[in-house]
Length: 114
Image (cartoon, rainbow, N blue to C red; front, top):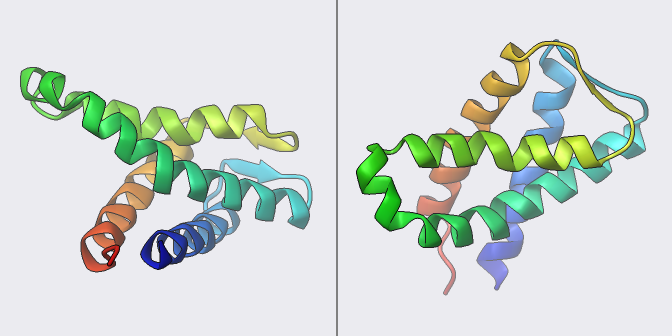
């Protein structure tokens, strides 16, 4: 449980930094950015691994394309539901999702639940 909470917090901090640094994503307030970072961090830590388990048989058929699509879709859906987020270009979210995926997978490999 401690590893899960640590991954969620680190995902939220990473997402907050990506929102601030990437052009093309605008957030109205600092509170909205922090809320979005926590919600997307929770979705990345909890929802994405569950979806990955469910889609494992189809992942073989699509040669990993389904995982890439799922990693882009999960944060995009959360961003669309939160108020105050505006996305101006598709390059920024895709770049952000790719960086988030790389860091989230690294965190999942390094930080294990004990």
